[in-house]
Amino acid sequence: MSKRVYFGGVALYVVALAFLLTNWLVRPPGVTEANVRRIEPGMTRVEVVALLGRGPDMEMGGWHPNLVWFADSGSATVTLSTNGLVMWAHWLPGVRPWGRRISDIR
Image 1 (tube, rainbow, N blue to C red):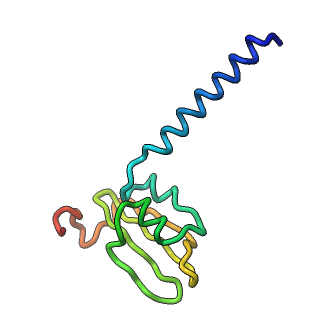
Image 2 (image 1 turned 120 degrees about the horizontal axis):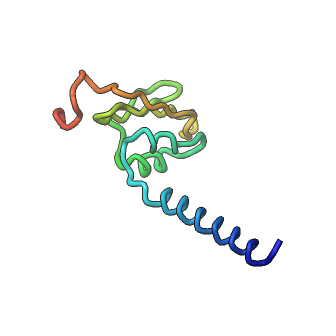
């Protein structure tokens, strides 16, 4: 294999990696399905709030507290462990409080 082909492949790989990195870095915060999928077990509450752009709309206490965010397109639920780290996160499409848009109740 010639050096030209090798370096061409490496250059293509670097460009593709740059596009993926840019896409990951410029995602705006907000309560969206894509951002909920970015929540990983072990993240702190502060990291989740930063990713979703605001504090939860509702908190339910208990042994494993649940944090709930509402958006016009659905809702996000994050369950925390007893030490305050994320156990899991779920996106529920179309679930809104009282069947209304969030912008109508704020």
